[in-house]
Each structure stands twice: as structure tokens, then as C-alpha cells.
Image (cartoon, rainbow, N blue to C red):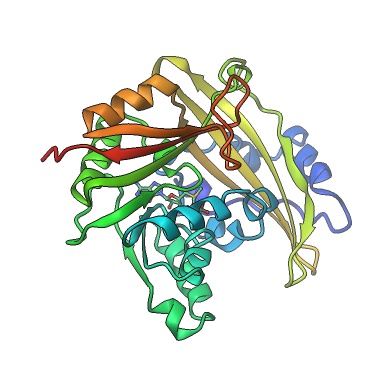
Length: 308
Ligand SMILES: C[S@@+](CC[C@H](N)C(=O)[O-])C[C@H]1O[C@@H](n2cnc3c(N)ncnc32)[C@H](O)[C@@H]1O
């Protein structure tokens, strides 16, 4: 875990793009850097041990522009009671939900993501802050002493649960926190077959064009799949952040984690074993029907029975 928590800074590359930085990482024989080429995997995504993720999360364009917020706000608004968001992170969805007048509890394992969420909430008016409670818990093992009308998992925290035992443990906890008729929204990506086969990659692919942050830092990110474990339905992923400081220093940070992928009927079976039935299934946040080329699998499940 050392290397992931203490990334080796690249030589200063003032004026160079991160791709030049990336080429240095790949081609130069820098022994210390070679050591971090493939990072130790962190089963829960590394959010709770890598402070840089929370620092940079709200600046990552694909996260900022993710078209899911209105979907979740609307669901929370039409729910007949409070919402529980599992893996709430920095509050990307939670804060707009509270702004829309909904009461919401945000649960996350990462103190860094929660600290960022608290920092953002502190800038909100009191009436909005009053609607929010944050708890540092594991989504596979929690007991909050209250029930909700809706439980959500925006932006795929469920895919950090790599084993069936973890998935069932999470669903059992959710079952305990909903009344019969309460709803759970499970969101996972729809598997692209091309993304689950191939040779482990040392090549980094650009995730988005470099952006400038308000404090003058420049942020770029690449990613790669370092292993395909098809028997376990897991890809080992590396998200590689390049931060260029105004003084010319350049940092390279790696978030490495195993990511579970799911197939449609597998999720339906997991839900059935956990006291739920699928009430709605969408292929995107525009509520398009789930189809062959859908980017997402969004299950709106209804609790049918108590299982514990
Ligand atoms: C991709 S982020 C999503 C954050 C937020 N829901 C959003 O939409 O921006 C995944 C979050 O899941 C959290 N997470 C991962 N495994 C978890 C677990 N076992 N229990 C609770 N939170 C977990 C991480 O700490 C991280 O904040």
C-alpha cells in the first residue's frame, strides 16, 4: 500500500502535457517509478486511504458532468420519506437532493470523502444542512436505527463489492433499513464485452482533456486495466491522476482497485434472494428502456418481504 499512498513524483515537467509525463513514466528507466507501475489493489476503491481522491474528485469532468443528478433528486423527491445514499462520497448527488427539500442520510466508508462533503455542506444554508446526516460506515455492515423510503447507490459503489458474500451482506442491511414497499436503486454499468477481455495493459489511455483548477493546478487523468479476472467478473483498474502545480512540480497519483461487473439476471437473482423484486429497469438516466447498447443498468427494486 505504501506506493499508492506516497506516489513517487515525476521529475518536474513544467510546460509539458501529462502525456509527455506519461511517456516519461513508461519509457524512462526510473527504478522508483517502475515500482509503482502496477499498484496494490484496494478492495473498496482506495477512497478511505488515498486523500488525493477526495481532493480531486469534484474536479474530474466525467464525474462533474455525469447526467444522473436530476434522476436521483426526482426519485428522492417522490419517495414517501427520507433517503439513504450508500457511498455518498463528496455529496455530488446528496447536496442537490437536500437542496431540493429532501431529508437524506449519506453513508460512506471514506473519512476523506465525507470530510469533503462536510466542507461543501458548511457553505450551504442552515435549512439545507439540517436535512443531512453523514455517517462513516461500511455499506456491507451498518445499522442506523431508522428506516427509509428509498436507498440509492449513485455512481456504482455496489461494484466495489467484489464477492457475492459482500453483495448479499449489503442487500441484507438495505432490507433492514426499508419498510415493505420501500425502494432500492442499484446502479451498475452495462458490461461492454470489449472491456472484459484483453491483455493486461501498461498503456495509459486519456480519460479527459487537462483541466485547470481554481487554485492554478492542472489536472489530467489516464486509466488502464491491469488484469482481467473473468472467472471472478473483476477487472483490476488503475486511475492515474497527473497534477501539475503552478511552480512546475508534477505529481502522479494512482488509484488502483478491483472493480466487479454484473450481468442483468445476476442482479435480479441477488435482489430476489434479498427480499426485493425489480419494479423498473433503465438503461440510462434519461429512463430509456434497458437495451443491448445501454450504457447503464439501473434497477429500481421494491422490498417485498423482511429477510431477517
Ligand atoms: C464513485 S464514488 C461515488 C460517490 C457518490 N455517490 C457520487 O455519485 O459521486 C464511490 C464511493 O463509494 C464509497 N465506498 C466504496 N466502498 C464502500 C463501502 N464498502 N462502504 C461504504 N462506502 C463505500 C467510496 O468511499 C466512494 O466515496
